[in-house]
Image 1 (cartoon, rainbow, N blue to C red):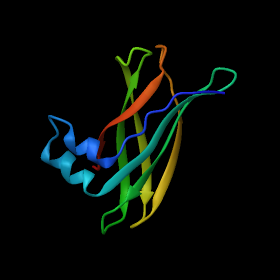
Image 2: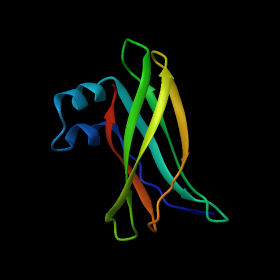
Image 3: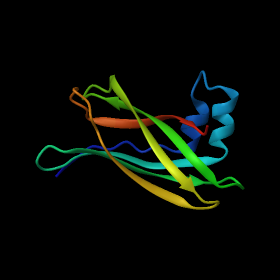
Amino acid sequence: MVKYFWMIGLSVFIALSGCSDKTVDDLRRVSVEDVEYQLLPGGARILTGGVSNISEAQLPIVQIQISLFDEYNRRVDQMMIVVRDIEVGASVRFREAVRSDFDVRGARARSVLIP
């Protein structure tokens, strides 16, 4: 199995320039961990990771914007991961197929939105 991965922690999100106050506030409510891009045998491309609710309220929906990168670490595409119903203190794993026409080699969480 060929495996490419990029891991991201909460501190990277807060350091992003151009974050709105809402986005920064959302980052105080969730933590995105272990974002990993995998190229599986047979060619399937999968993005996995986890979201933890570190707030004091149940989160009905969390949207994670993911940037996809090529072999030269250039951003070539993006995708949205939606995770629903995260209880207080709970962590939820996600696993999504990567649907892109580009030769994706890595991924990073770019932003988090809690509508």
